[in-house]
Length: 306
Image (cartoon, rainbow, N blue to C red):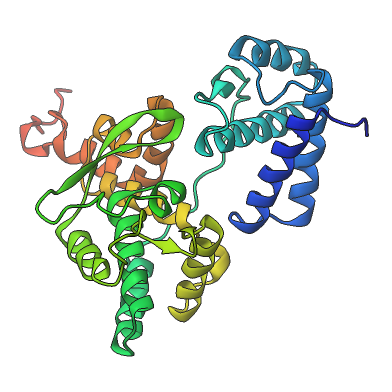
């Protein structure tokens, strides 16, 4: 392969490292991502990381003669890459919305049912019974992941005093620098307050580790260790899967899609709409029970005249 410009090379390497450590991507997946990202960088003369929406649109148009599957894979790789750049603060925006989206390309999110979530919290209680600050920290982390839908980066980098005991929400600057209101449940506030007693007063972070805060990689490991203890296959779960569970279970409970968009911090409601398919059963029941023509007693059942 042609040598890449320094910035693209470094950022692609950092992205692949994140995919391996946090997302648990398989070797073949990582090789495919690397091949697609390097190819795109070469087409853009080493300026992929700083590409504008218009430049990505032209790149997508150049890929249109490719098969739908190949186009979908390349576009997905770039979207994931630019999402990473925005999350990590390497650029203030995510221009990847201008990339093509072949029909049927977006995969369904991994989700956990209520039984699996209950098993996770039961395992946390077993850990807490053994005592120790780490079990209290784990409880606070999982309560915030599942109870507030935080992204992994947002969670581990929370400031020491981000969550105040008497305030049921916090204002968070998330992906792309967008601010959003994040609700904090009573359970999560209680767990954070308990954990706060173990955090040094001079710490900048709510979840300190060494000279910085807890890493996303370590958070990923903690979640998988918890899943294994709860009898859940570790490959079924990650911090992002708990965010998906937060969204899915809210929708099942009757949450409005626009409210869910705000809570998740999605710039485009089309991103949020991916959750509607996982609750199709409830939506069908809603139509059958609430539609004006659904009440059989309203239908004149007299037989038609011969």
